[in-house]
Image (cartoon, rainbow, N blue to C red; front, side, top):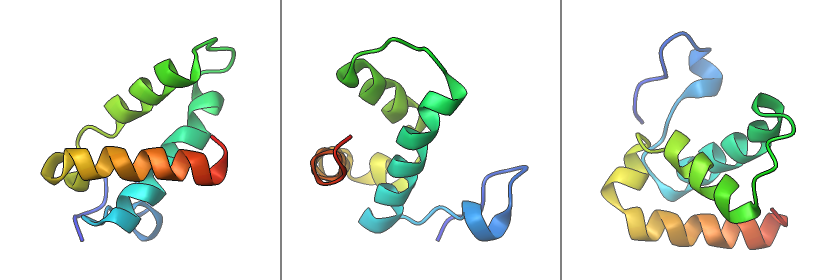
Length: 81
């Protein structure tokens, strides 16, 4: 486990350096993107790149970028993003 993000609720904002942690972080960022950027007008691919930039400091993405991208692609298919 990596320490929580600054200025956040430690119980809900812990970052885990594993595929599950990356998947949870991705879903939270993907689903929150529209709330943070209403009417953004981005394509699915553009939104994906924006979300991945938001997650650039996630330890799993840093340590295993190819595996993290494969996980994200699978999660997008699974959840219909």
